[in-house]
Image (cartoon, rainbow, N blue to C red):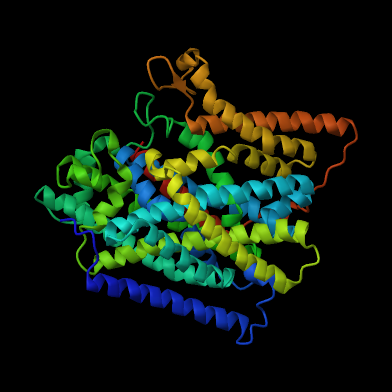
Length: 564
């Protein structure tokens, strides 16, 4: 059943994908820059693709940059382990994107923001901006870039039977080729990447559901889905009770009312990696692109979660051998998606392999471009060479892309991502900085009295508080909080652990309170603050956007009502 290799036809399908993406990328690069490269030296054009991305390119690029191995491998693994509840990250992201389009993007565009550190410098001061620039560079390289590389290489190695390190090198090289063309090439090639991603992902889901149906003597994807809900009913619960073994990862109503909002709003609204796609467009185009991405987000659990649940049902019925997932304590849910791909028929396996590779490469390219943008514009240009020419900035950005990818390849094998589960690994460790960053941004947006000192507290204090809440339960008996039903979960006979989503909520609230206190104290002493250019009219969306946003809310309400 499990032929850990691709057939000749599969390789042909994959190389067709490679040629289409590479050829289109070269065409876009030559068409947008001109044969003489006259626009090559324009840093804003290179990093932001200023004014050239259409709404469908922005929406596709957002999804292509977001959906990667952490979703295909990590989220499918979480679907195998805990079920549909993990789809909360995807479905709540759809609402989050609507909020970002209405309230965040207008602020960035109105104030001509190109990078997140630039926003912090403009709103607070250069010290806050530089600290966060270094924070983001470290986070993007050590957590995000490396996890995408590692999880993607594991999946591709499992499917193609290739050496793990070789797979990492090839993914990194392919991503570098695309990234060196700049944001225009990334944005427009992402349209093709998303096409392969969705087509191959849907094909994998269809065949996985059909396999479930076949095993139970039926046929068809719909029959397979109904059988899954029947034989794995515990995997179709969106809200976990406190006695659920996965409560630490998704603690009850917190997924709707607490820390999940911080995860999503920080990721989609305060993240260079994501917002960069829209920063070079006008407001209507940016909003339309983000709304398009929100609709695609509704589809993602079908592609990345249902296959994991299908793999779980087939595993419980011994369709897959235990050796394919590990055994006992070594059971690795992150193997679910690669195992499924290995049972696909010839040709479709190549298509799904291309979809997975497209997701990984697009995400790597987007991440590398954001790293290069922040390093070049907020570190190199501000500290090392303030008089750098446009061509020097672009050249530095390209060097930063290569260096970041090399660091990612060197660091990735040593992180132990698979021990925790890829998707949860990324969410938890990003969560050490998310609450403070989001508090700093949200007050910076909408409260003119927020001071730079308050922002520094959120930056450094938020991280330290996250570390404190992470390790506090190890040395302190928190069992007295159990009757209140929110912050603790038994981890042993006498040790309690705070779910990381709850931890993020606590840290965010503390940061907001302390920022308000610090700001009011400094305001009383006459400390002046720098505001942003904001007027209420820029928050008014177009009627078509309102209709689209309302449709998303109706769909999500129906989904949560069905699978509560």
